[in-house]
Length: 79
Image (cartoon, rainbow, N blue to C red):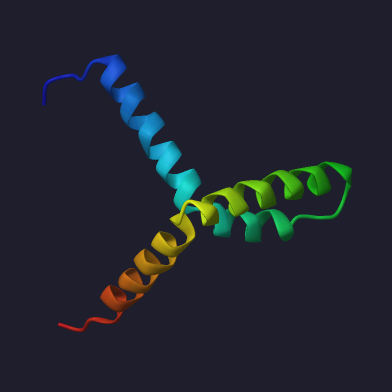
């Protein structure tokens, strides 16, 4: 395979990170809420809750739920 340019690889990684953050707001919140309680995790929980509220406002929460249901259906297929 031909080597890729650094710029295209960096853009692909940035896009993948953004998609993971937008679609993964609910799992991120679950993970943060499972951390030990201290001032830093309280602050982090507030940020994640604001992020989750924003992603729900733009409809990404519904998209995540739909994709998760589709994936679970796919997992249940037996050949």
